Length: 347
Image 1: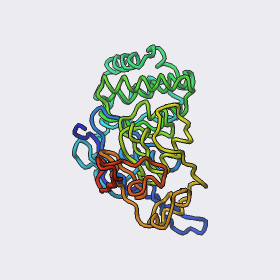
Image 2: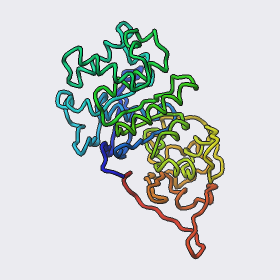
Image 3: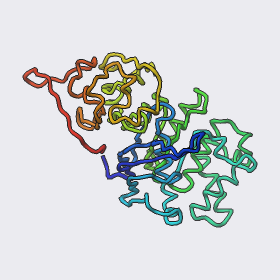
Image 4: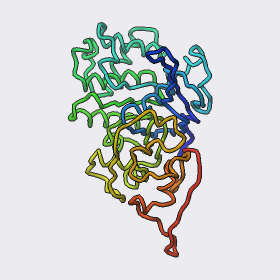
């Protein structure tokens, strides 16, 4: 991978709330997450709602303050910077929102909303701003006359294209794509995916893509992390995760998605029960109450272990006893089962 444009190291994010008795409670939404994103690379994060995947992006953009860890943007740790000092980095990091209607001021014209970003680009004259806005809108496949309408007067697909255009106005380096197709009709989703892929190639953009739509992630991501209750439980290239999934949670997600492709080399997994935040206080595997392969050893802390180069899994059994979980066993030249385990940073 090329030198990272964005890197998270042991990222933590806690939310502090009070219950009905006004007692202070702390919920950890992101728990020790580490990853890198290279130039023109898409790093996808998948998982069920509430697992913490969107929080990662908002912390990286400093919309939420990190509780701990480092955020390196082109090698500089921006996590401790104040809002005033971070403001100079805003152009490099932009966000494509899940709901394009909520991303625009409903009482103002689209041109007015886009003009703010042209100003952030450094343009002061209205004629220069308008020329840039109209050119950028055309580049995302829309007629410039749309920008004088209000958000409610254009379709959802058109508005999401305008959402992308707004980010491009400031020449960003990294886009956080927060469920970019979730609010769109199925017929429009492919158009937005193709637009994002085209702009990534032409503008050398890097993407952090979070989604529960495994098809969108498969179409866009170079590497994928599967997240469960604040932790990455499996990380690898797209093909490693989709074709050679090892963690029971990943396998359960893929089964539930019922993908036509790619073909997988493991048996199906059926997870029992529902997500419970109560298990986050336990030291062991957080999937244990739902996992059909759970045993006493799963109560011990689980680290990310390497199963092959670039492919990590937070499950000791998937590494040491894969056959017991319906996984293929990698063989050495002598025909003996090979068991490899090694802790490493997600790179």
